[in-house]
Length: 253
Image (cartoon, rainbow, N blue to C red):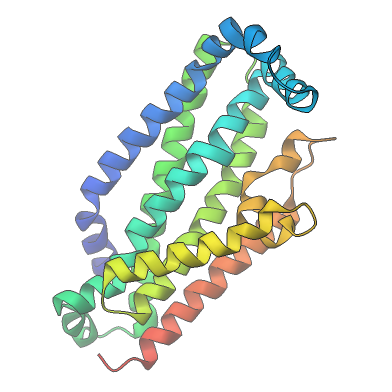
C-alpha cells in the first residue's frame, strides 16, 4: 500500500509543483486586487443597480468578505474542480489504457486497497495545493491590508477542501468505470455541471454540492460554521470512494 502511494506521489510530483505555483499566484493576485477595487470602486458603484450596489459596498467595506468572495466560491473552487478531475480521471482509466492495471492486480493487494492508495495520494496532492495556496493568499493579504480574519477564511477553506475531495472521489468513480481518461473526466465534469444547476435557484440550492462548498453561511448572519454542509460533503466523498472500490472489484481486468 505504501509503495503504491509513493508511486502515485512520484508520478504526480510535477502536478504538485505546477498546481501549487499556479494556485498560489492566483491567490496572491486575488488578495492584492483589493487595492484596485478601492481605487475604482466608487466610480463603478454609481453605475450599478441598487441591489448590486449594496453588495458591491460590502466588498469595499469588508476586506475579509472580499477575499472570501473572490477566492473560495470562485478561483479556488473552479481551479480546484479542474485539478480534482485532472488527478482522478486517469487514476484507474489511465492504468487500464496503458495496460499497467495488470501489474497492479498482480500485487498482493485488493482492488479496494488499490483505490485507497490512489485516493490517498490524489487527496494529498489536492489538499496540499488548496492549503499552501490559501496560506500564500492570507500572508500576502495580511501584509498588504492588516485585519484579515484568518479564522473565517481557514474555516471556509476546510469546507471547500472537503468538497473538492468529493469531486475527486466522483471523478474516481468514472475512472474506475472506463478505460479512457479523457472520457472519464468529461463524463464526471458533465455530471457536476448538471448537478450544479440546482444552485441556480434559491429553493434548490442546497441540492448542489457547490453551494455547500462555498461556505456562504460563514459570512452571513452570525457566521456560524456549517457543520451540516461539512458532514454532507464528507459523506458524499466517502460514498464515492466506496463505490469506486466496488466498481473496480467487479471489473474483470
